[in-house]
Length: 197
Length: 197
DNA sequence: ACCTGAACACCGTTCAAGT
DNA sequence: ACCTGAACACCGTTCAAGT
Image (tube, rainbow over all chains, first blue to last red; front, side, top):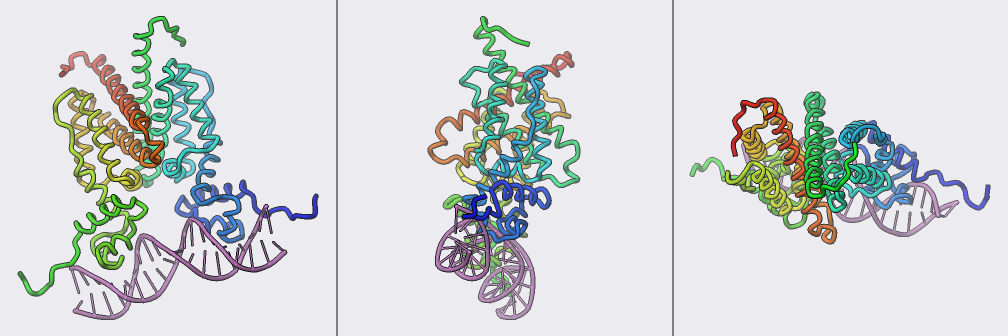
């Protein structure tokens, strides 16, 4: 309504959406400031009104993808929920080829990333993992899931049969098994602990 | 001795060594075809007599680093040897900041990489892991070690206190614990199996 | 404040030409 | 066969200038 300024043609949200659209269509290599700007009908310099640099743009694209990944429901054991978390995250990342490479390359700032870490933390805390191990456990799981998806991204069509999915599942189960073992050790040492499920 | 051709000024080994020296001195970002060529007193085009492209050069640099990492001795349990493998690999990769990023980015071809995978395979086979699980287990361990080192590389000096090393150790132990659990399951189902160590 | 054309300082790679 | 200068087709980012 005020006449003193025309509405901006661009905004941060549309810049991030456009970058994600380019990634989905032509891969991470196609996400250049020039290409994103071109898609918006302008030049690369225009993006810098909304973003400090290309890394920040990629971080925002990553967080947008993470924000759209559902978190598992509370049904089932913590093991089942952790496995579902890993599978859902892997599947969602692979739907945007190249985004896992971004996740490995840029520090995981962003609200969606933090929310997912908090969810994992709550899950493992509820399972009985002691406070001093929570962060290390959350980091290990997060790292494995992101790295596994990233490795699958690199495989060409022929190599990425069902084998890759099964290897991902196997490693995820190894970590779940390791956590179970860790919990047993604490139960031994703290026999008064009440055990749920 | 033959006069019909002068000795080449360059060879593949010196190109790879120079690229690694640049990486060690100024980081992965400084490893450009121009910089490596300049260090050799020539232009970037000269490298292409020895290397198909930059990715191949980086693969060779990676394999050179991997070849210099010692493999643990046969002393101790398989768990102890696996932990030593992980710690030694992490330490050696972190001595060349940026090389873990290369390991995550390029497919792990190369003789040294294959030799290390074979060593892991032999270790887990000796531990009693069934044939059909070996590849998945080797891949999971390799992936975790490389990704863990890569993540640590990204941390700046202040963030990379002892916390990062402890988180790496924790995740590595989770995988070892998961493998132990996996082995117990197979012992249950194959009670005639003779168990060593 | 928002936007932009043009330029700067780089890249990886190719190729014709030299020896 | 080995080597190279020069060019090609790109990059991310900056900045003065416009509105």
